[in-house]
Length: 233
Ligand code: MN3
Image (cartoon, rainbow, N blue to C red; front, side, top):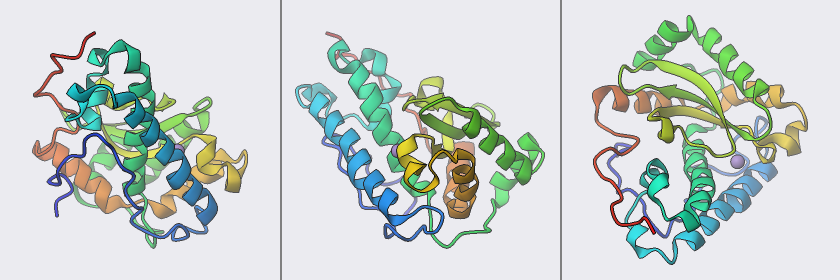
């Protein structure tokens, strides 16, 4: 099935099973941090998001992307919670799809490879920029490879906490988690080691599909056709 044709999940949001075993990414990401990350951290974001949304049935048919894109129209009493917990949910469900066992040594192909060469000079140039950006990011956050849907141009950037690039009308193609819960059990303070190990578990096929969907205009990974008109209280 095409990644973008599934029905978009809405409230109540649920934790989907990982598409691989907890130990499948060893030795790059160990089983224990993987299981805690998925079952505790990601679940907590979903639980807190659902709790915030529970009393607002007018928001129950909105996807997580819609809730974040228009978070300024979400009722002020839950706005920050939806932004933070919803961002945590959005980023983690995307992150699990980025990861894949058995792909060490894989590289981007097709349009993605061409775009990376165009915008970063080479694949190695892109990887160096991504690792540098992640290493220099202060405290918690995420490092992103994003596409500008207007022209397909790629960019590497980091954002704090669970701030989403949806708010900047950019489309995330690849992300890595810079929160200490993602790497501290295995790598301690060695964030650069963690960032370099990440290249052994990236599902480039999926990343490439994301870019091709953007370039084909098949998917609006942030929604533009609908506004919340009923929610300001
Ligand atoms: Mn995390």
